[in-house]
Image (tube, rainbow, N blue to C red; front, top):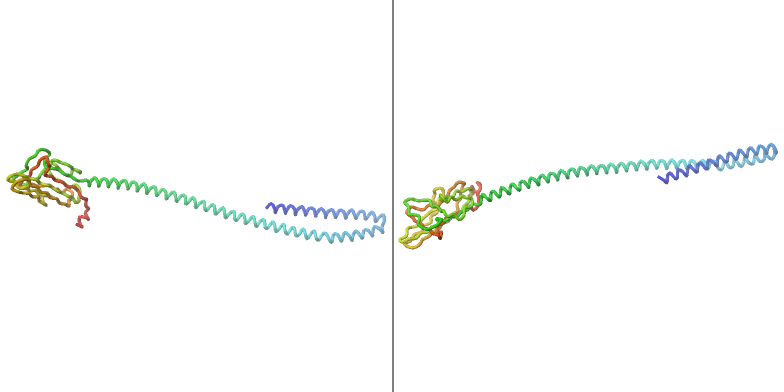
Length: 295
């Protein structure tokens, strides 16, 4: 742009100088004509001769100078016009490119803002899901802890808390009460009644042992009973000395089922500080309805 302005200033200066030369030439011709008029008055013949020579020279000068000047002016005018057109075209192209770049930047800015908003929304959703997962995880952990606490079922007890002596014989069956409790996790065993009540549906392991002595010896016989039904029997007998026996069984229990040991009528067991007679049980694992159906 600065180059074009300098070119225009130079062209205007050149035109001004040329115009001054033309005006000077015309003034000189007028002065020359005045001198010629005075000379002609003084010397008519010589003056006419000089006038003819000057006229011829002036015509030759004008013939040589004016066409060249006008052609140069026309060429300069055309060049200036072309330069102005080029400047306008350049300005138009620059404006268009500037507008395009501005539009592109505005579009990118809007897209960036939309992307930032989308990222913010996604981040908020992730935080929300994380909180939900955290709450869910805590709830699940607490539920698992509760289930584990519910699954902690085990007991073991011996016949007598202290001393020694015989139990039986009786004329009818009795439920043996194991009062010396070693373990009662879950409090499912009642040492007063001698009955275990299932708090959870599942598979349970039970075992018991009996011991007797005497001479002559009385048989020692007892059985594990589930809901009034005899399941397994432990029996021991000999004419003299000590006898013992034990049994174990895995049972599928529903909530509320009861398991206990029954001493048969006419039978006797003995216990002392050595805790020969015991009754134990524990939950192997809980069961669901579908698992019970498959079994």
